Amino acid sequence: MVMRPALINVMANAAQKAGRALVRDFGEVEHLQISRKGPADFVSAADLKSQKILREELSKARPSFGFYMEEDDGGPNFSTQEERWIVDPLDGTTNFLHSMPHWCISIAAMRGAEVVAGMIYDPLADKMFWAEKGIGAYCNNKRMRVATRQNLADSLVGICLPRKGMEQTMPQALKTLETLLPLVAGVRSAGSAALALAYVAAGRYDACVEVPWLMALKLYDVAAGVLLVKEAGGFVSSLDTQEKDPLASLSFVAGTGAIHDQLVRLLRV
Image 1 (cartoon, helix red, strand yellow):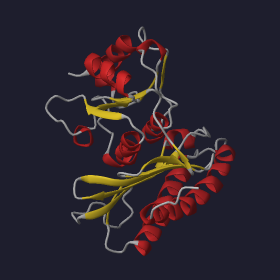
Image 2 (cartoon, rainbow, N blue to C red):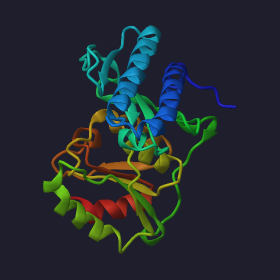
Image 3 (cartoon, one colour):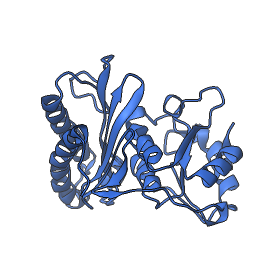
């Protein structure tokens, strides 16, 4: 059995505690669908509750760390401290809202500009995808490797698509899909950027495409997942020729070597 590093244990304890609260709240969402007000406010409260638990648990274990978190909970949301947590307390909020069992908690630890550890936790499946720089990527206690497929025609590609409010980006989205769909075995948009990256690391997807139309994509959505892919033997490259760092551009391809290379050539602007 693999021994989890101390930093990963800190993340795991916090994520499991927050995950238990989210699972309880998720069980109530279906009943709220019939209410006049609807479940949106309830889900927002669940998101904030998860973040509160994560902030408390992570602060307790590493009081010197700063935070960059998704929700405005009255605490410091961005820190210039050398070491800091990058936290998305509920990635896949729309899925959660519709009782779709595809959502997660994402936590990364950064030192300076570098992600040194990351975790994506799926509480419903009790799957903990984690990695620390230099020691590999794991799902629970099992080592993860990216897929070995070489041909684009055999590949399954995860992608995030624009939503309401991003209408001006839809022509670009359609153009990207027109490029991909005739060439790959399938394209999936499941509603969680973090889990899409975890699935690349686990060999479920051959690649994941995060593209420029996602103005709403933030560091906390992808920081942990990018490290998972790299530590599982995959590659991550920016699609923005003006910004080589994928975490700075937030527009990238992550995947196994051959598929990654082909997609970068097809999609880089």
